[in-house]
Amino acid sequence: MAERAIGIFDSGVGGLTVLKALREVLPAERLYYLGDTARVPYGTKSSGTVLRYAQEAAGFLVRHRVKMLVVACNTASAVAIEAVEQRFNLPVIGVIEPGARRAAAVTRNGRVGVIGTEGTVRSGAYSRAIRALDERIEVFAAPCPLFVPLVEEGWGEHEVASLVAREYLAPLIDRGIDTLVLGCTHYPLLKATLQRVLGANVTLVDSATETAQLVASLLGKRLVLRRGEACAPRYFVTDEPTRFKRVGGAFVGVELGDVTQVDLGRAHG
Ligand code: DGL
Picture 1: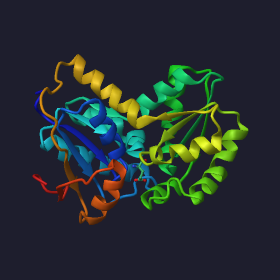
Picture 2: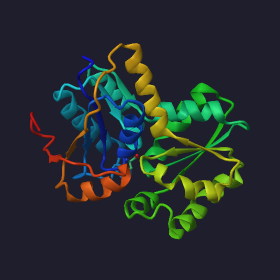
Picture 3: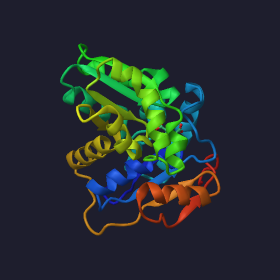
Picture 4: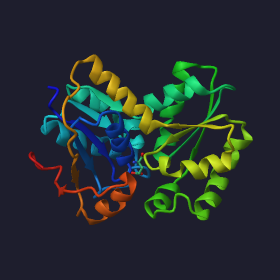
């Protein structure tokens, strides 16, 4: 079991922030990453559609005999985590719960902001998860749809990103938040910009790094951590790989190597 890969999926390149965080804490693990690039974005789609896409992506990785699933996409985690857990008989970790835990632990004034896609914010999933941990916490959520294309353009630290961030974050700043959950795969690449706009007193919570920590502790408890040499991740995408390689390489900071195009509808991809 320890030798099997961890399966990670996302709507596209964004989940590579989770893959990168996993590689930092678990360098010996085999990682299979699936980006549903033919159907990205998930963030603007209805929950029913995202649920179906998530089941298909999970099914593909389960057929590749992974030992656990990481739903790296916040939108998919927000609407599909229970359904994926119920359907497949293996451990499933999404990014919402780890981010929510961290936010509830670090807020000092009980006022937490959450930013994400339209779908994530509409679902109310972060708010529910945070308030389930501490119902005294007030959660203020704002969709920030322009951040995804800005990051994919490589403009996370461009002044355009600062302007957009000021617009999106103004209502959260007015609410006096002291903690902001980065509830979307792409937002870790905006950290410097967001911190500048919010000021040093607001703590940023990165769901990607929190998720990686939780995966490490879960595999450790189940005694299925892989030992030995580090090995390169395997990448699967549902569209032609050129753009994924280019944009994804910038996300991870190294060239991605082999990327295989697959059809989720076919039993063996
Ligand atoms: N991966 C998505 C998320 O974290 C962002 C991109 C999309 O909308 O598909 O919500």
